Length: 173
Length: 101
Image (cartoon, rainbow over all chains, first blue to last red; front, side, top):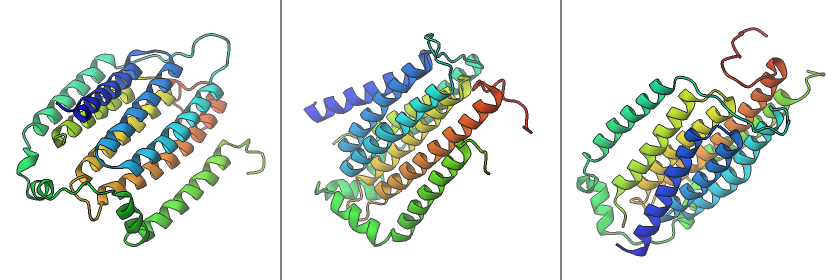
């Protein structure tokens, strides 16, 4: 087992452990920090899959943006009294049963697909060059996917204005 | 090279944890965290399959768009949560049950 494989399983295990911490803990802020660890580990998994640019984007957008936004949300929706911010649980039995059954179905199907026998995957493994994908990604974003790229920009602008309008004080709307 | 099944199993685990978090938690923000976990699980699948496709890396491009939409969704959802909190003085989803404010 090489060093890369050991690191992959370490990061995968850390991601799963910190994600299940969200289920275990009652404190909302602990859940947010566990989610940070999960996102960082998922970024590491992206690097192992050869997607360096996606990994950097994941760290910038999720850890630097969405998680900060969520912690702001926790702060703004709870009165800071010095006590812990806790969340209660409901539907415990049904939820865990559904999760376990769902994972069982997915696991059973995943170990049965035999991805090595699929044609385009086995062909690509034979001719794997391991070149950098960032160059190709930039070229295809600016040529084949230029329209979705621009629409994503407009979507971000609309979401920004909409979020500011919804969360504002609402006096002049 | 790590076999693709291991990526898929990791992604399935994160997906199931996200589903259970959405079903069992009462705080709206923790439910949002579950949604983000599910989106990340989908992204792992896309990136894992795209490593066999070096020329047109469609999986990575789609992952970028998923991240953009997730950011927009989180911003709008947190704005809605702030309005809901201003109206109900609570973010417990059991107490938010009136349709018309």
